Length: 476
Image (cartoon, rainbow, N blue to C red):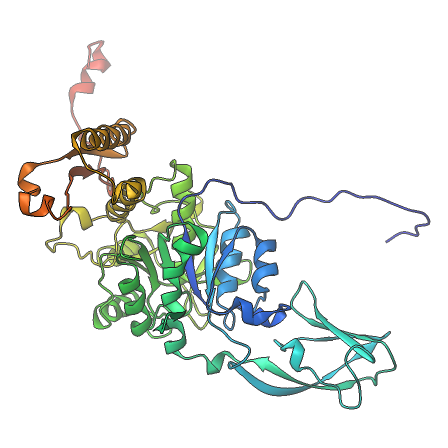
């Protein structure tokens, strides 16, 4: 830097982008976060936390690049600092508790000009310097890059020995992620049930990167995703364990052996990397679905497959690089596994199916494609949300006609926009016998055809001798 004397100003390029507003798709992530960085970490344990930006996440969860320990940081980074489009909001549920998931540690901190730094997930309230008093001899705080900063108020030795408790992910059990509802106190995945009443938002995607490759956790996710609060349907994003499945054949076998075959789950393999950071496929699938939905009026009728993802290569859990071409990627797709493919100068998500799909098997037409499955969820969720106010009100013919007219208008608009091929609603006498009506139970019948995904396009080219006539002035 040249010699300077005076006062200067400089504008630098923006590095963070804000996600667009009005995004209806709501991914929910369950995992671990560095809440030891917060002033009140207990307030961020087993509660649904709405995050709208990277800075918002730092304030509410803390942040660390140690994604193996703090899995929710991967989701935050993938949504708000990806190279394609920052997208949110998301809800995160941290289960890591500084009161229980901790272990004792000691470190020597170098003190230079009265300041030192500790690179460890230390719980601030636990930090002790023998013979010194916090607030009198020194202060501690977390910096924005996740380090503990010591500031000497009196003389500190160089180095200074520091005793503290640190967050210890090895103490987190699968049961902490699964959680439950004990006497009205929800933990882990069960906290999903609090999202609607605390945020007035419907959870539509559930994920647990770093944990979903465990069958017990996958089972809890897929169970929770059905009729959340007795109403809402969501899609689960999950991973095949790429530390156990290191080849395409092994990935397919692992999926079947561990029964990752649910129709309400999209499963991915392997991991991917970008700028030195590695991502689980489940995280990238959720980000890409939210981006795709936002680009299509928040209606999930477009598959996230063949849409760009911000990655540079593929790898396994241990960091070993792996590569394969489109033909091999299609082998995974045929088994209901979503992966990645390099085409047209960019990496794209590749695979328009959910985990239930097996090529050649008999599958309900509504469950063949991820977009079809998600559209059916979107419709059941929307009908319930739109007509909740009618519950416990009088249902006379005028109300029936109002519901039919309003619903048909909405369905017709979806058809007109190409988001459905067909949509109709009826109030049929056969579905509403007198015995049900006197009990106040009414049924509206909806018929719909979701827009199919163009999984393949084939252009047949055939040779003909007709063009030879043009050599002699004729017409081909």
